Amino acid sequence: MMQGHFDLGGAVLEIGRGGDPWDRVSPSRPFAMALHSMAWLPDLLSAGSDAKAEARRLILTWSGIFGKSNAFSWGDPVLCRRVFALACALPKVLPEADPIERARILQDFARQARHLASSLHKPHRAADQAIAVALAGCVLSGKAGADLLRKGLRRLNVALPSSFNATGGHATRSPQAALELMFDLRTLAGALLQKGMPPPDSMISALEKLQQTLQFFVLRDGCLPDMQGGEACRASYIATVGIEPPTSDLPSGHNGYQRMDGRGLQVLVDAAPPASGPWSEAACAQPLGLDVLADKRRLIVACGWSPDALGPQALRLVDAGSTLAVGGGTCGAPLGGFPAAVLGPRLADANWKVSSQRHQTDGGIWLDLQHDGWTRQYHLRHERRLFLDLDADELRGEDSLTPFEDAGAAPSRRLLVPYTLRFHLHPSVSAGLGRDGRSVVLHAADAPKGWRFRSDAQDISVEASVYFEGLRARRTQQVVLKGQARPGVGARVRWKLAVDRSAASSIDAGNRAL
Image (cartoon, rainbow, N blue to C red; front, side, top):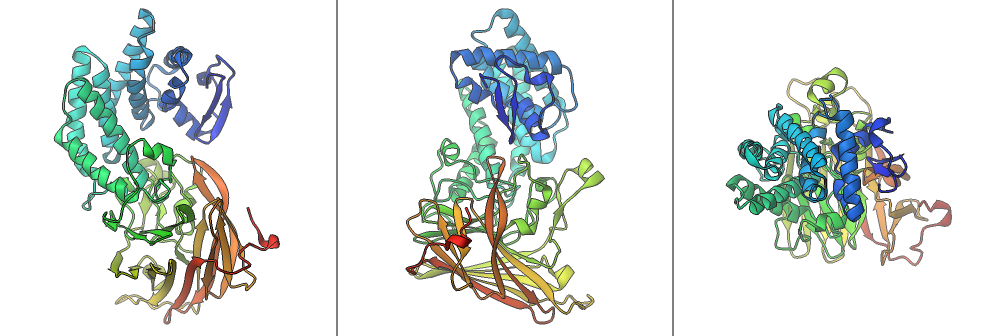
């Protein structure tokens, strides 16, 4: 940034040293949102004393063009994140500013904070906005600061309880959303303590819930599951919040997710419906999707779509998860067109039911899962049985489609219904068909051993896929199992993931895909 190189939102803008990023067209909407939210200020300020002057210059040039109300830069959620970022940056930026610059920056900042405080807060963003308003009140002095702080804390006390569901997890069911809320609350708690004010009880309660949530979700590689509109995030980023990877004495289930921990394998399964209403704007309709880690490395994942990434909304559908899809249908999809413009891209038709049972012995862990997301279209119910063999360090799965006829529903007239079972692979994993043509050999980069995926499916193949990491799409692969089910009979496919113990564990050169 000091050299005029802005890499934001998955796009790059070159403005030259001392250039103005505000007087030119942004390369993409995500780039513009990241630029105007000023979430990059902490990175810029880490560059030393010269960066403080550059930060002041960029803040002032923004005010010169966008200081008055603007539908985009003053809209939700850009304004909220900018007020939060400025509140964190101004204590570092202002001490070296001359009195005129200081007064102008503070005046513009106060006007933005008051505008945010007076705006109508949507339920799923009310906590973020209240935190930003309260944090601005901690930075500003006098009556202006006191009014903002009082209003922000009052709204936060109302917003925080509704930000959690009945299980104590974040209402979006997104692990990353829980992480970001914890970062914001800890920032506000620190600012309150500097003013000699203890955090309110609602904040303390929320932080305790988020601590438990993240202890469950931080996997062995130090990252999060890439599910429900959240990416895995960098391990170093997650480590700054002080959450250690889960230990064996933590719960095996939380917020509708189930975790299975073996010697080398770790499995996390989405065993609940996605969030509903406004909380589902980034939710994904991928029932019973799973993540698998082998030797602390990502092996099987979801595509990791997130709302800030450049990926299409289609990556929120069932095909982008490591689960089973029936026919060409979906079991929930985001709104589009005019409804999306009014309500946001929330999920529709994703109110299916999920049930799960867990059984555990010294030798293994069983999960019996099922959902009815396909019953309305195909009169078939998806059942997934997972067994983690703790002694052999193997994961065995059985995905079944069983007939389900609703009383009064017309029976399906389809002779055969195609189904597809997908296992998306992390970009660090190379995959290729084994010599037997019935299995796939998997090997993660720098892993001590390879893994073999076997199945009795009618058709098994390795196809192209995509994975989002740091808001960017990376090419990867997926193991695809295909078959056909009879509506009145159903279908079953079994599969197993185990250490590749064959002498020919390397992938055939002709099938190698990097």
